[in-house]
Image 1 (tube, rainbow, N blue to C red):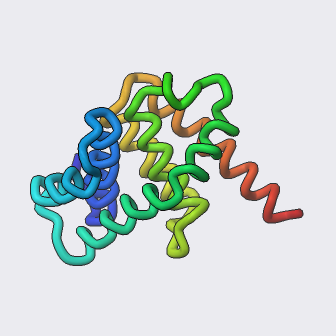
Image 2: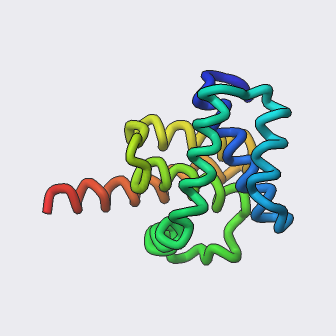
Image 3: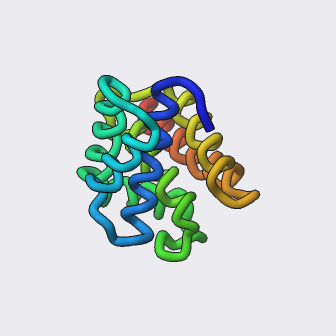
Length: 142
């Protein structure tokens, strides 16, 4: 999976979050390894570090959003790919002060889920993020 520098940063961030989640390794070590493998430096590496740090900082709130919008899929039972793609996208959409446009964040997340997850991962991630987006837009109108 290649693409724009931002996409490559998101993929490196996702891979580090996934690795740390499934192996209990330190996420910072995993990220530095992923950055080296991807050949990312400068702004691209900084963006990936920002994403991972943001997910770690807001993990409780992010997981609460996932739990609220995917109640039939407990976090502990959810596929690790899906869980970490959702964490990354929800951070960008709800918690990041330099947030990506909603459509971009959802499309990137769906593409990553399709590339790394099961056959149904793209649809699942799209559905959860769509529910998050609707809730966010509804809250903005209140």
